[in-house]
Image (cartoon, rainbow, N blue to C red; front, top):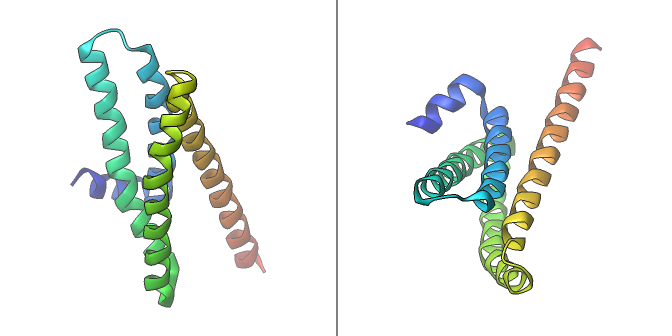
Length: 134
């Protein structure tokens, strides 16, 4: 219900960008935990953003896939599965080095995804506006 409202108001692309950014920020804010309620709130923010991000990404991918929806959905699931395998593995290794590194690395990955998404959208809009002017 919340995801649908956000998509209607902002669109898939902006919703994805904002949730990636908020997820990244919440990862870093988890390092500044002061008490139980703070940790609960920041964790809730992080998981809410991730729960909005997944269906929004799937929607955007299926809209852009055209007749290749099955292939795109399969590739998306394959990459998510690889992330579910290698993410915790890498986080465990980083945790052994320093307790804060998994959070900082996760924030870096999410922030990088945010910037790539923003640049991709800008490029796509520029190409579209050039094509419309011709």
